[in-house]
Image (cartoon, rainbow, N blue to C red):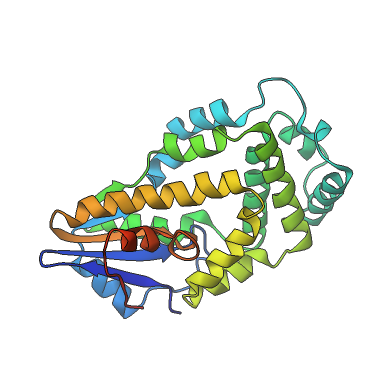
Length: 271
């Protein structure tokens, strides 16, 4: 087990940059001595977003605002025959009830895709509550460390809410096709993360995103640039900070580190 960890430092600051995976089999032990040492020295933990808020009433309201189809058109009227076939395969595979498609009918495509992804993860014993981010947040609370966030839940859910109808539908169709045709996808991503192969993980993600340049820009590049700008401001202060974001943001084209290097920072991989 060797998930990727980087260090940025100057005379009065240390910032560790750690690539996480948001959902995990709870039996997996991912902590290493270097991660533990970095966390012990840390004053402040930064995560992408508040996980408490993501599971609270505010998120439910935002999902209702951004995730429901308000024009009354059924999702299933929009799908190609190929996607409908893949969808039916997944319904059978996961032994879902006959009325499951009716439950998805009022959803926008992105929300229906994430609903299927959650079902797939649960079937593989992969649980967001056992994810690295949740574990880090729980530990920070236990040791009364300061916890901050790089984004608000409005910003994160707004990424999906602001999808164009065309990108929204393509996101669903591509997700469903991948789940049906590549059931090993989750385990492939997990294996890449466990071995610290951040470039491989980024390549894996970008194979999909490269087909959707608008999504690639909004979900990856713009966020990476924004986070790098925030880290730049942190480095102008002092203290020890541990930043944990999805590992796919820390490799490949225009990663967080790439944007930081454009600002002149030297980043050392320590694991």
